[in-house]
Image (cartoon, rainbow, N blue to C red; front, side, top):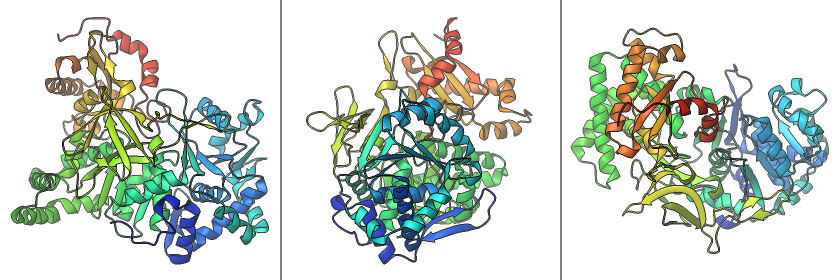
Length: 613
């Protein structure tokens, strides 16, 4: 539902500090922020909204004492911990601009952002970050002057977060704090988000209070949730999705943010908290689906049959809702019984039994994954947008959705398609331009305000947008045919053994692929067939597994046209991830990195003629 909370002004006139002031005054006793004090801590530490504002005020004074001024950028590289969340708000209250850097960034990416942003201060987590940031203090080309370290034991000679807070407590003046945030205007920058650099150096996207407050208000109108609902915050704050879902929307809704410092522990947090909302990028939903499938494979046949029958009922019910039809009473009754008896017990074990809103964005969601979750009564509301659009441009909602699409435009957003299918957009949530090193902004829109998104798609007769691929990632074969790599990759990944895939063939006469076994499901698949392999690498060498992968590629090719078919492939022995560089922090393929890393292998796949015509 749209939040019924009082807004402290018209949506286009709100600033983030005004929302925090409202929350402290009108919802001060409600929980605002919770975290665990350490990786093995059992209890949550919680701040109310009034306590959050008091700590933000003290921190703002600490950053002022450090010399941070209105309008300057402050870099942060920390996990999802309270020092990060509270510092973000404190800097905004000063009129400074928080800029979060991905924790998986390579030293050269960090150096680029530090040079480009002209930041003098960076707030980092501990020893791991210090090793990458400390050399920049001696780099004459980098304006960085000071590091603040959250983990006091790792700080060495650098300023600690604790001492910064203490200085703020000594110097805090309430009148100066209130005066500073009230000088902030909606057109002022709220943050700069650097793109994750799938194809080159990260670009700085400057977003204003107006961009992001309008985004929050308009997105809230598409989400059917109880007021003050909890949000499990586990994606990096360097990603626009978590900045909106984990900072700006909770401020708007006076909601409760649960910080999950370790993203790999999010499944455990879900099992514990049984959230009513959950957002996951496509790879997260794929991995969760693989885990459920692995559990199903171990169940007795009779129980699996009952679950599959319930899955069919759930998908049938979702189909009626998708078409805007009333669900027949008999089907609704049968589904309710099957859900209670067959689906809910497993959903409860996974912590997924209370979900009222589930969503995904950042990349096309494989349709088989969408249909899988629909079979559990979980309709993933896929959305689409970019950092440059302050988050979502289009969204599915409970009263209007098409599974496999990314929904319709939100209020205030216009879409049109260029002749080559590229999606163009304009509206008040679209950024003004990319940050230049001198602090000015370079527009990326045309004279009429249309921003070219780089995504290719189509609009159906009901106004739903369907993504095809990224414009820069389209493969053009040697005979001039355009191929969508995402289409081919998602088709082959429908087999449960295949967890990751990348196809290649630009300027070539046919496509080849690199395939990676699913780290969760492949071992379970093998164990069910009596195959013992201690590692994913050993599993990839098993003849039975290789034969099944060949059948998976053959089945995918049967559904693709001749140009799209995979002629040769190689099964790799290690999973791709952000730490090893093949994926962005939001789990999208870094194709250039994969091409560079496996260039010799890809070339070798073309050295002999393919086995199929």
